[in-house]
Length: 167
Ligand SMILES: *[C@@H]1O[C@H](CO)[C@@H](O)[C@H](O)[C@H]1NC(C)=O
Ligand SMILES: *[C@@H]1O[C@H](CO)[C@@H](O)[C@H](O)[C@H]1NC(C)=O
Image (cartoon, rainbow, N blue to C red; front, side, top):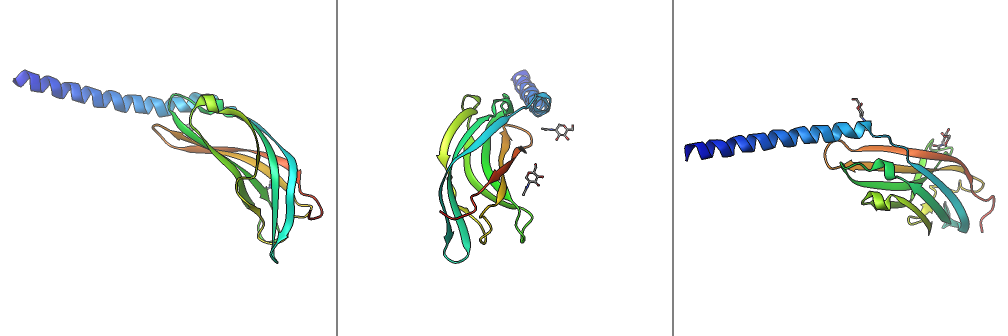
């Protein structure tokens, strides 16, 4: 009886230690994996571009998003949250960031994709600054690990612009 209790306790201690060890290795090993995500985004069409009410410009566009985020996935990756934002400067703000599309990528098999979509969230400026506006499209991602710290990174693609006139 006595030795059984002792054995169970030792086994438990061993399991906890092993688990802690595995977690430490898991979050460490993330650091050594090579991450080289890639993406390309094209604007296929400006569907609508108008002045909404008195103040705000609104644009609706169709995007062609190609991305390969497979290298973000290790055995310690729970999921990846990705979003595409339009980023631009106005006299009032040095950075305006408007999220246009996002997705939760559950596994490596879904991390390489191509999607043609109109913006999922409304692209509205806080003013009427969008005519002829140059902007960046940025793919941001947040990697949620099974254990360890979440981390985030992005790819910035400059050189996009909006038409000079509403349509
Ligand atoms: C990798 O390790 C360094 C220092 O050991 C740490 O500063 C960095 O945030 C780690 N990177 C990731 C992706 O966990
Ligand atoms: C757009 O990208 C360029 C080049 O990476 C950068 O210099 C600029 O600050 C970016 N603009 C905004 C508003 O983030």
